[in-house]
Length: 67
Image (cartoon, rainbow, N blue to C red; front, top):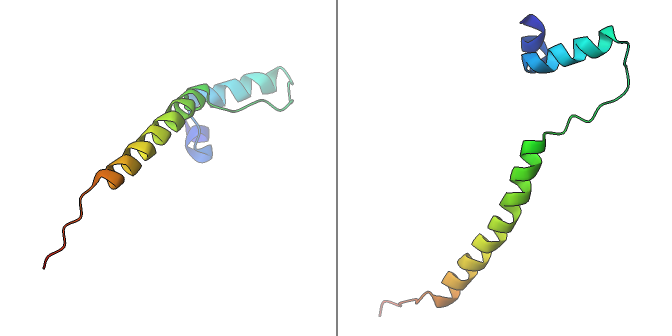
């Protein structure tokens, strides 16, 4: 569909917008992606865990000096 390509949106999104336009419903809608929100909530704790692991590995690392 040409509209989807032009606006870089998926076809279901274009169909939803056209449907609301036919119903003359021109109010703002939340366009947040729920899957992304769930993924983001899951990745934040993982990033913290990874950071603590990296810090612990740095503390435990042995540095050898060549004499």
